Length: 162
Image 1 (cartoon, rainbow, N blue to C red):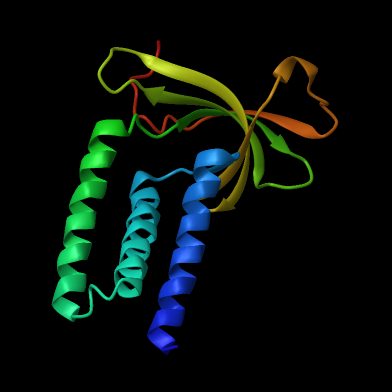
Image 2: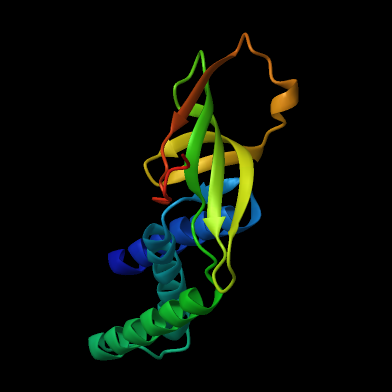
């Protein structure tokens, strides 16, 4: 087995795992560009592995053309199915023990409708573009573990209420 094939398998396992975690767990990629970066590499590495197993995609040109087609398909899929990123409007609470844990009010704009969806969510920041999120009931919060902030971030850039 060639070193490049091993790298391709590793790339597929890592990127496909991240895409599946984002889809089926509380893991959340909070930037659409990073999400589609992982989606593109997961899909293209899978197609290249399958193509090599069936003795297709042997030339560099065929791999490049395949990657261009997959990028176009990922873009079309993203355009038709993406409903928008959740953006933090207000940080309500911050953990006393871990500054990466917060409770936020987030909004997401409806794609082809007017208005916004809102959620109150507990966020554990893993990386600048990766979070672990969970629904939170703020009526039963333990105030000894959380510090009230009410920090207005307004990541959506909405006009301020007067």
